[in-house]
Image (cartoon, rainbow, N blue to C red; front, side, top):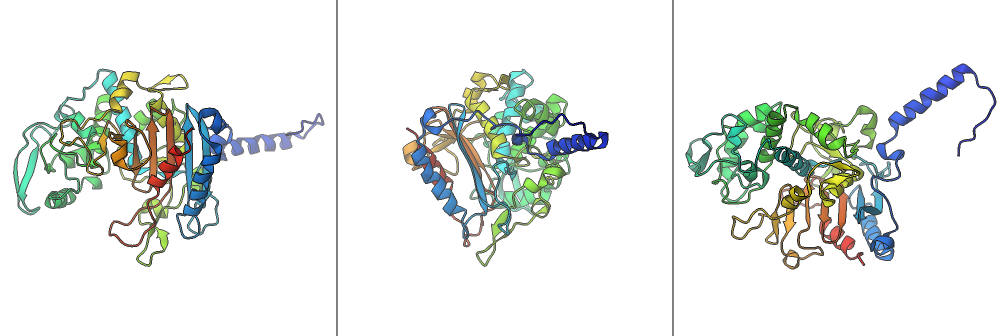
Length: 438
């Protein structure tokens, strides 16, 4: 407690104190002056066993030990109350800086759910519909072509049998190259066109207009980032705002997501966690890329709707709780209840089976997976559970049946060549969260 004295102070001392207070407010993280990003509660008061949560804590301490991940943050909320929020290990490769609960992570593809919400806000305003063709908003997409053979040097193309719709983009069924078997030459051709080399979303879309599809729209699920980049450009065209301005004004500000954005202010960059990968020697090292060398700088030259955001566990918990609460948080209504219900349903019903390329127990909604067979999935959870991940080991899930949200934030890029790497721990994490429910 600060003791208040009646002794007169010199004017220069008063100004110094005021300046120090102002600087302190600027330097403090957003949650330093707030108790928690959501109301907190004793776990047992929300039907979560405090004793069983200790299993999660013990596991995470082992997973972030000397031979594991540098560190991580976990957050569990039930019935709109945080029942567990922990930081483990360290935030730096030297393992000297303890991980903080307000640490900032590159959330990569968890950005996609945010972009999907932005699109659905415009649907609610009557400015677009899910069945609208992409060509209604962006030039160059009037006659999509499908690559049916040949090579990147001499592709064999034919007209697609239907237009690319906004719904197809949202659900990854537009047919773009997605690393699936048979996509190799289409991927190579797309890499030559290099849409990711654009400096803004307009340029990205212009380059993508020359990229042929690998399959007809609506015939397969193929997870790709280009679809969400195109949707981000649609948001710009329809709203008349830059994509980052739209997200800031319509989502981040209303939800008080003060630490979420496409870059991190210089004063807060010490909170950005080191991003690691595993070298050929099996040891952790700093990953490649500008953001790894200079934490907090933009992840892309353009404001990527597919994977460009930084955020914290606390900020993303507010976003996830908004979805779990049917589109509203703290009196701010971003989406209507029926819109969120639609987002959380499986939209792959045109496919047989109606599942993603990653799991035969998961469909896909608007912005994330949807569990359609909890038993086949082989981990604790519920039908209708919804969520997504980020490339650098960040995860979130919401469960309307259990009124539960769970977030795991790590910062590690797994090896793609099958070499020695850290074990994936998200399945363990979710099992340990669900086993604590009473």
